[in-house]
Image (cartoon, rainbow, N blue to C red; front, side):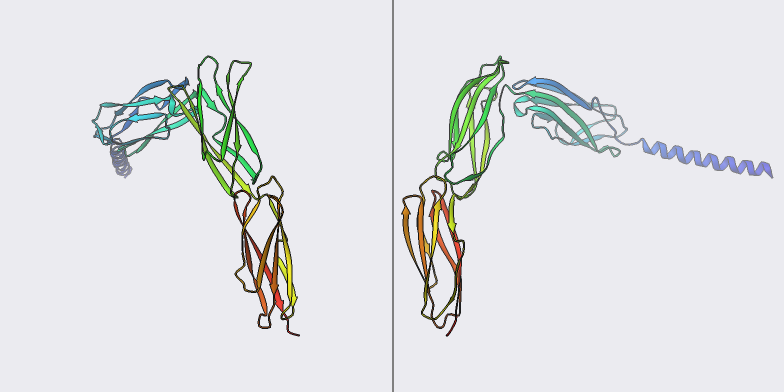
Length: 339
């Protein structure tokens, strides 16, 4: 009895061992991708240098491995391998990584992604690390002036720096739009030998209220990286004070007239001009008077009530050149009461 039981136990154990061995065997079948390295640390490079790295893709499986796609998150490293490349069992193919330091700067931490038919790991990563030192640089990518009152003389400085030991000459600074941005170039030299130019960027001309965006392009004689640019942004706000902000005519009897004077005063600089006053309501008449040339205007708004009016409400529009176009909308209200 005990012997029979022992035989049964041994039989079950043999079956389990066979099943496990079969499963293990099945798990190792198919294509397998092995990378010769998973990291390329290219160290510290001067901008303008180029290099290449070869990473071998080896198929350690027992079926054909297909490299579906190789992509990069780094603009300065270009992988070279045709999509659909097949690698037989026990063979390998070179993946060429081309480094162009003109397409990046600063500390680089990116990845190359290899997508393959390896069922265990369909995506494999190669880390790209290093530092690219620019020969010349700008200290901003976007120059934001923030909130600027219309007519204000706003200026900020952008530093263009050249590393010591390198000969770079500033050729030109261009702006778009050219009637809104100006630049004064002032050379400097630091104690450590770095040198360059401070670019005093100013907002000029007629600036319309609202968001402003422009571009500055800096050109040099450095052939490897001759140009760099930056955006210029600002929020242009009105510098004209309008009072009152709404016209409350109150209670009026039929036939009664009432006038409210609106004062428009430019609080910064000169150049204010009232271009137009629009009142579509037949109850209203408007008269514009220039009180101080380019600085203060008065708009007299007169409302005439009639017996059929009831509630009178609406909006008048005053078009201003501050300089720069601005539309002022003033709500008005009156109630006509019968005696």
